[in-house]
Length: 130
Image (cartoon, rainbow, N blue to C red; front, side, top):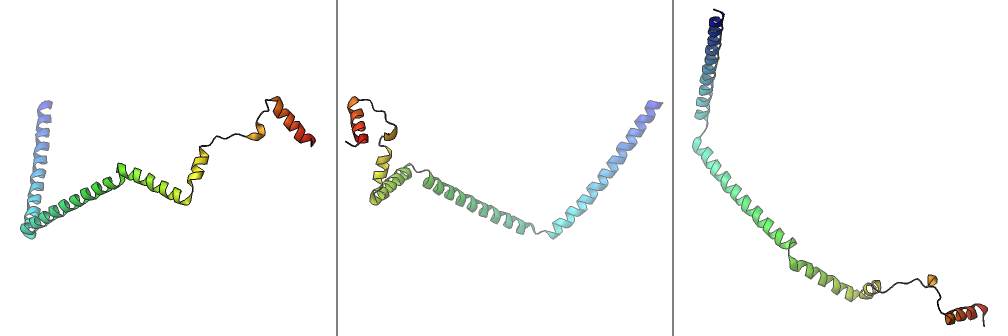
């Protein structure tokens, strides 16, 4: 008996849910009918087509800009041209000598060790003033 009562209660809940669902669908249908009366479908379709055209134009423009930027910044010749231009400017200004001097060997004469006897005699003579 208890199981039968639970089944009846469940059936009542299902019927109540179905009734609420039917009412909701009815209300949605009324709203959709009102919206359809107020909306000009031809105008919406025309706007959508115009939107698609504008998006296609925008996409093509973006692709062209990206291709142009890629050509400008990724050019292998551009680096060689830059180096050539920098070298020309350095030559004109006379800074090539500075570049050459950077590759010259560097020694500190003050810390150089005297290894030969002849160098020692020269130093001693210079110090004694003779």
